Image (cartoon, rainbow, N blue to C red; front, side, top):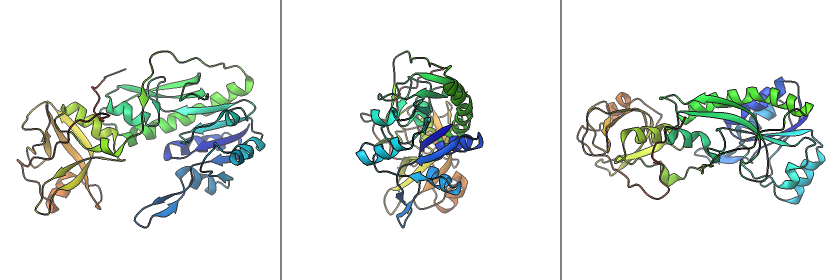
Length: 325
């Protein structure tokens, strides 16, 4: 088939690789424009753009797909279908209608649960036990299209957004050949979504602060759901003032306790509102990620230290854990 591919982050790269390997003709790749990155703020292409260019594919990076010129360019491609994976832009009706067979999206949840921008993170943060990947026919509504193919995945107790997202990206990529074959033959109509939707709003910077007053299971889910980016964080007192530290991995325990935010021992076990969280991977600003042992050798945090416990605000990252299957 003659295809356009639209995607931006690492999550989308396996899908593009699968489509190439399956022998489809990728006539254009669309991705978000290069963004400033690193200390030098050098413009850096997205993972999809970088991969597409190594494969010799033409890449388009319009700032918006809502204006006349990029819409006209897309229509002129005369593709059979467009495959969309975490592109990051809303597509207007003129774009959705341009491919002969339509536009199709790989989404990282079991819709209608977690429509929106951050389904992988929100599923972990909410304590869901299962999630999935689905290919749907795109409509103008936010992730409201009919489902063509699905694959269910378990969320493991030690999953982070990175590990779960990586697993989902490869499972999702494997769905494309079957989906496109069915679409080309015209034998798949799709199943309309049923049930009450939930929305995976974009992660805001204010959500990343750890609230130690919450139960340990919720704090642990918060940490893992935001790892590695943007990274859940806390502050610890020092002679020079509060020092911010990211928590990138943790494990909860019901044993032990203390004042919320109190460091209980040299293993960085921290008391929560209920139970205890042991921090397993941490990162100080400007430093590489480390184990607690490695960090504490150069930056000691004495047992009895109380880490700042941020208040739960409206829109907090701490929903009541659903345990949804």
